[in-house]
Each structure stands twice: as structure tokens, then as C-alpha cells.
Length: 62
Image (cartoon, rainbow, N blue to C red):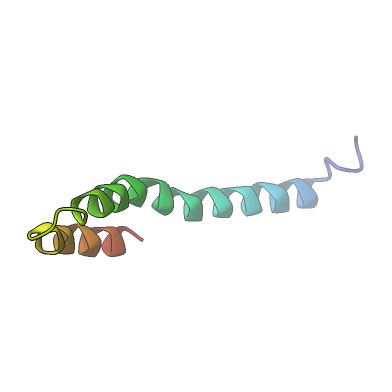
């Protein structure tokens, strides 16, 4: 256990985990917007018009 807990290795592991959590957070926040956009696109006439701002919002979040 002491071999794993060396200060440099532990710092590196924590840095990689923090970076991964930071990058994964955007997808989690954008998911509800993307689901709403997909649900709205099903509407025959106005679906694409209403979904356009939702798609732009999801791209901005990502």
C-alpha cells in the first residue's frame, strides 16, 4: 500500500480523476436539453423550429 501512496503518484491519480470528472460534467448537463430536443423533433410541423434553439443550447453547453 505504501508503494501506491507515494506523493507524486497520488497527486497524478487525483489530477487525472479531476480532469475526467470535469470533462464528463458537460455531457451530464447537456443530456436533458438533448433529450428535450429529440422529443420536440417528433412533432410534425413545428418540431424542427422549436428544436433549433435547444440544439444550439446543447452545443454551447458542450
